[in-house]
Image (cartoon, rainbow, N blue to C red; front, side, top):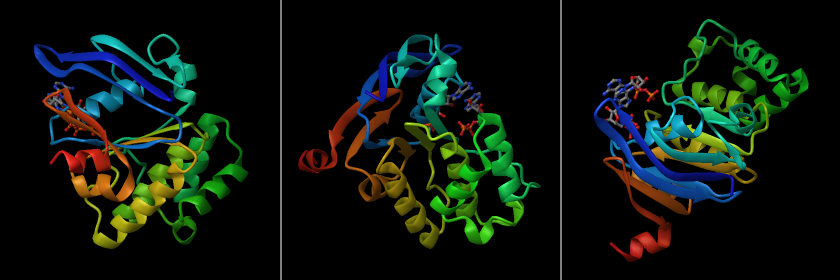
Length: 219
Ligand code: ADP
Ligand code: ADP
C-alpha cells in the first residue's frame, strides 16, 4: 500500500474534526477525496503529510509511519496545499531551483519538471504575473521535484476558469499514471473527470469508499 490510514481521530480542542477514519490506497491509484467544506479533508491531508499530528491512530506512507519515521515518509510525499504559500516575488524557475536545493535535486531535474507540467512559456516570469492555473502548475512542479511515490493535492482545481480546469485535470491524470494520488474536492464532477475511485467524507466520518461505477449504481 502507498497510503494506509488506520483509525485516525483528530480533536481540535473539544471539536472532533476526524472520527475513526480508515482507508488505504494502492500504488498507482488516483483517488478523489470528496466532501463539503468543513468535512475534514484538509485535516486528513495535513495528518498524512505530517504537518498535523493525529489525536489517535496511525498513518503509513510507503510503509513509513508519518509520526515515528517522518523524514523517510515525507521523502515519498509531494504535497500541494490548498492555499499554497508561493513566493510571489520570485521568478518561476528561481522558485523551483530554490525548492530543488532544499531536496538536493539537480538543476537538470528542474528543467524536466518545467516541461512535464507545461510551464515552459511562463518559466521566466514572476509568480505574481501568472494566472491561477499556472500558479497551480508551479505548485505541482514543486511537489513533484523529488520524484515522490505519493501526491497529496488539496483542492487543486478549485477556483480555476473552465480552460484551466480542463488542463489541470488532464495534467493530474497524466502525472497520476506513475504516482499514487489523493486529491480533495467538494465537486463530484471533478472526481468523475479525474479518477475511478472516491472516498466520501462528511463531518469527519467516511461515508463511502467505492469505485465510481458502484457509487452510481447505488444512487
Ligand atoms: P475541509 O478541508 O473538508 O474543508 P477541514 O479539515 O479544513 O475541512 O476542517 C474540518 C473541521 O475542523 C472544520 O470544522 C474546521 O473548522 C475545523 N478545523 C480545521 N483546522 C482547525 C484548527 N487549526 N483549529 C480548530 N479547528 C480547525
Ligand atoms: P488550509 O487549506 O491550509 O487548510 P484553511 O483556510 O482551511 O487552509 O485554514 C487556514 C488555517 O486556519 C489552517 O492552519 C487551519 O488549520 C486553520 N483553521 C481552519 N479552520 C479553523 C477553525 N475553525 N478554528 C481555528 N483554526 C482553523
